[in-house]
Image (cartoon, rainbow, N blue to C red; front, side, top):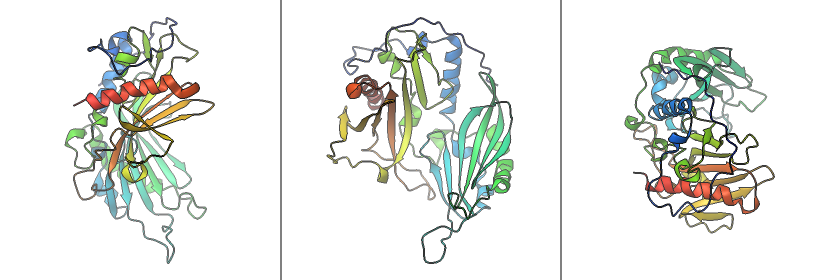
Length: 332
């Protein structure tokens, strides 16, 4: 069992994260892990182990198939999740799905017990289930999330959450939770590069020489970080990894002015009053799919998202994104 204790990181107010031109770094730098607390390193190890797990191995597909005809099992937009979609019949001549039937199940999100323990939570047209995994996070037990969405969940005609159906799937899936399959061997998930990588890998360069805090160390595909002791969050950035359907991503030859290139990767840089955001479609030239008939489509693209404080031109966020893209491109 993984035991993670509380952490008291060294707090030294530093300058903002060093986010200059990171593309010309000379030789390998010491790992960012050397500049975080021992507790944070244990949490990072925990997340690294989660990245090896196939979330599709955490659900009993035979039990899911008893809820309806399964048309898709595989990759979801969140790298931690496995998505199961059902073939819901249409209503008459229009294209709306018959309401009140199982539409999809997702599994894979993990959270720390907030004190309410394992449970089913109803929502309008959906049900959230939390199951104990037997693992321990920093401040409490780990829970694994299952979500069932009913067809017509956004319609007043369908208010049934589907917790009865989800409960059956969860009960059948319990024995699988402690013996997950490996992501690298999954026939359902797209075998892309991004899920294998550490989202904090860019910190070797962009925070070189600086004591840092990783606030999302228990989240496998997110790196929310800042300089140690910077409670004003001026040096705070967030790097996260996502999947996007190829049909919903920009075409590689798109010349729309809103797109730019970061180390050759088509990217969107956006600035609002609250933050700067960069989305880099690093896998656009090499979309991936699963390896069996229920996961052959759609094609998926690796996406790196970086956010930070708003500033003119989003220079610092672009610089952090540049290093994250470089790490991706140079990874094997």
